[in-house]
Image (cartoon, rainbow, N blue to C red; front, top):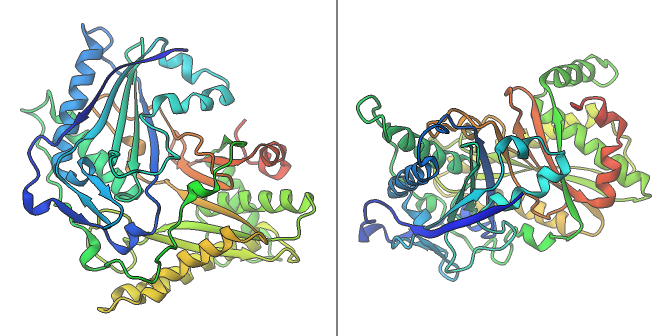
Length: 440
């Protein structure tokens, strides 16, 4: 299944960025993650297949709307300056690649899962594991057209500028501008708030000097990725079972994400213990901070970790793990709500979850897992003018013990994209407790 790249160029904002905005300072929360790329691929079955020059029309359509979007999100057309921790916004441009697949979208979607997942990197414009260097674009996109008229839009955005919330704001802007093209008399473009850095509220302190979270340092070549599907009916069944066990009372109604995190965590712990390991088990959950204490609509990274740990000699079940996960999120939110509300920011409190996470994933005495939920984010319904995606995916980032969760196609289930080393993955795929709730 061949994919041919036909164009590679730098797309600049449709209007020049004013000189007063050329230096975009990053905040404390942007400085913590290493400058790695976050991948996302959206697949569309378009209705344009009977038009002439369909591929040229789609490519031009997306390039024009991207250029307009970069006017609002001008830092993504700039370059990150490592030594000074700011983005140089002189409209250097975002990388834009056009490609043609010598097969139909249905052929890709019909592949057996392992083969389909192995192809995901081919739809992305760059390697996701590589750190963003000084001259590298902060946003890269590859638009691949299929013989049937379908389209894959593979994007990589730098973690130095964006978390998933900001990534979705960018996609929302781009899709809105894309729908505006060709519908100018009918569609009134929604106004988006001006990009503003949180650096003035959260300047970079010295407390985290030399303590960046760099997931690429944990890359391994034998890491494999698998997709585990949990339908809404299975999640309801799981929730009913854990809440009806009166011997282990759940103190709250667990969310679908919390249930799946607990189910996976228990499977990970079981695998580790079956292998004879006497190590503590740690889970770091990424948590969006925007709805905690600060009302401003921040762009950039504005998230932290809720950390939970269980010692190797403790008896575990799903109820225990669910309560641990729930308590860790509440504890982090409560401490952050107080710290964020103060005029003088308490960086000791703000940095604690990051340092705790770093300490655990660096320890040889702990098996650590990092989990991130992309559920309920708007990219699931991103409409460039052809309706919502028929599928979405990431790629193998070769970072073991990490999980990214998304909504399933219906919206109420969960897709868990799991990264483990090959041996652990084989054991996970045979886990009977996990299989009981998975969609075949």
